Length: 182
Image (tube, rainbow, N blue to C red; front, side, top):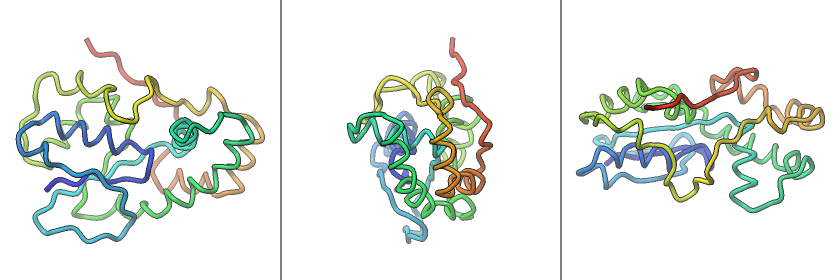
């Protein structure tokens, strides 16, 4: 069994879609939100995805249909930091394939690594087919710098957001942009 795991709104549906694109028994992959540790079977292939936590806050607001305001964003930060913190240890688990949401969308070399981990043949149009079409896709990516305010920055720091980003391997100054595919 292939298990696609990550904190809510980090891209677990996108990861599941990436696996489904391999076809065959990959259509039996499971979607989960299991913090570390969680026991999986010895034959299971465990995949874990993370996403820029600042963008997870925005995605959570959109998904829950909470109006996107500075106040609502600030009120949601602590919840997201706490939730995502329970998944950090998956990154270093030796039996887990870890990928960032942004990597999955920006460079096909990461899909090639995924294919190798689950022992599947990569299809030619795999990378081109991954964009959109998941149950939670809203048509675009959240780019935190597009809406960041001083109040959000202060709350982010106070709630441990910078420490979370560092633990997840994110540079707080990085902006992720999807490469164009031909």
